[in-house]
Length: 250
Image (cartoon, rainbow, N blue to C red):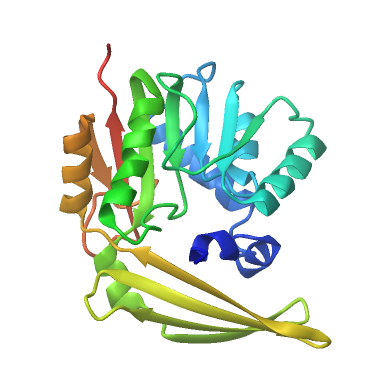
């Protein structure tokens, strides 16, 4: 059976999130620079880079050695077009599973942004993502994870939403699973003259302590956390959970 994330992240996905644009990506990168200030000349990996908007923002911020990794052929193709238009042909794009980053001891910085975590059925597979990032980092390298705040999602969930965009009618249903561990979304897209398309998402919502325990087990040091990419203090009302941790020097 094909996993939901293998079907969902195509070109339709980009049209569902028009507000996730270049301006937001530049704001995110400015926040990241305040939080961790990575060296501009060291390798940086955007894990689950999608269509490459953060890669463009990192290059505009002065980063010279950038790589993006994603599983989606469609989104990587969009990223390649975007980067080529921006004369950023030297930015490398890799198609791979985030649980198996194909390098070891290489990157000075790895970032995982916009809830690219919690996709797998079992927690042990999510932990494999963190282990993969740890393995791919160089000694003293930094990992930044931007993901959902479970308490905020549960308090602010919008169960039903309908909108019209670019001639398409989109109907979205969201729910929390009965065990309270996952947020699931079904998106139905209809357009005159085209068959209806349905996409599903299912994301594990971790508590802060659960991710901290994973990072500790793996060996990450200098662990710290925030309520957003601006570095605000974390609370149940925080829109995000942002973790920053380091790999020990060898």
